[in-house]
Length: 362
Image 1 (tube, rainbow, N blue to C red):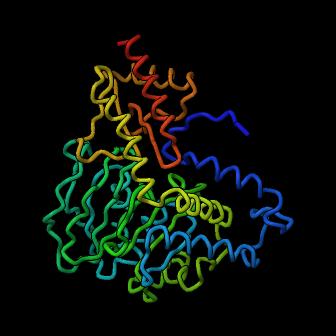
Image 2: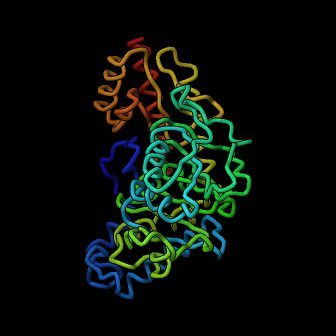
Image 3: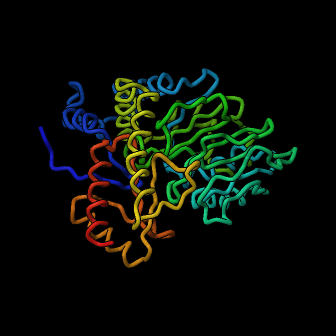
């Protein structure tokens, strides 16, 4: 069945693969003979426990997650993780952060509530249009961890080379590039990702954390829900979890496994991004502000010479059936988020439209 669906370039919540949505729709009223929707199902029901267990098993296989890492499904999204990381890992009260844009800045602000934060590298001097050199960071001996936002959703930059943490734990917010390319989990102490960009419905984060970082000696004032160890000890079911999001994410994990794994999705993402960046680089009207070596394959910001023309282009794209191309309110311009589920045809259609718009309006 064909559906009247737009090309949705939203930064999140974002598109999900159509075959996954069709499978979810088919199970909506009666999940595999249970007589109920997963949204109605008790999280203690055997059917849901199987959903949760299968989702974790598939994610482990998809990413090659080592046995000494726990996989957690935690409600609250990214904003909660800014606090949870600091609350759980700031044992000495010192942490190093790399400042690369809006989301790393928010993480820094939250971490300062728990201890001393040292910004060891920043790209603020050029409007966060590049990734700073992280090969020789000044990391104090008592630092608990080094934190990066591996892909800045708003600013459109990504790390293609991880920082030299000089033996300290690497923590990464992978929200907007999670499962978009292969990942060597063993290089990190902790990875977290809000799922509403590349994986599933909003309202949850996946946390992948090395077992030795789980602590039961947190500050006594720390809310129980903020303890990674509590979640790990209870298989992410300390309280009623986000059952629906776990179910949908599990569908996406399986879909990716059946369609070339992370190697396959990386190849498709590189091809999609090249279509858009190649046009922007040749355009006389549009400019992509991010340095080429640091360009995100997931979030592509671009601008015209004026704010008025930016707004006119956004209105024209909306009228043509392309949704959510307005840039984030903090930076303006335009932004195309081309996550895993965005088909190549969608990117090509956008480029064809922008090329025609430029010819008619330049």
